[in-house]
Amino acid sequence: MSNSDAITLRRATEADHDALWDMLRPVFRAGDTYAMDPDIDRNGALDYWCGADAGVWIVENDGQTLGSYYLKTNQRGGGAHVCNCGFVTSPAARGKGVARLMLDHALQSARDAGYYAMQFNFVVASNVRAIDIWTRAGFDTVGRLPNAFRHPKVGLVDALVMYRRL
Image (cartoon, rainbow, N blue to C red; front, top):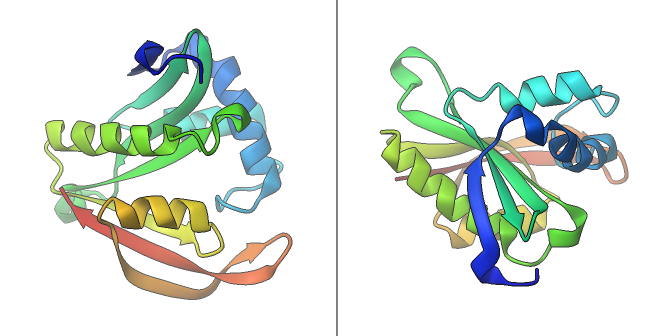
């Protein structure tokens, strides 16, 4: 990233769809972090990502899209006070603190929206970078789903349920 002062977080618009697809396509195609059909098409991926009821955000630096996250209600009815998020970073932004920046923003956005807690329903256990970020941010692993994810390279791996009060 060139200048951290130029980093902005803003709500996504339809004008961001090409940049979103450019980030989502390789992540979904890799099939190693999201329980998503690797052959999902552009419209399906954008419907999934942009269908979040509490919003979708874009992170930019000097006009370059670095990442995105969505915030949505995790369950209906009696579970509607808990939210869920999804995060994606561009290849050029990986390892540069963008995911942590998005997480901090998402935690505040969730508080502002009145949620009580945030839950990640299905964190692939081999996604050690994400698990490290979530753990350092105060998330606890509250459940383990044995062999729940078929990783394209390492085979069956566990999925974690991670939770944090806001």
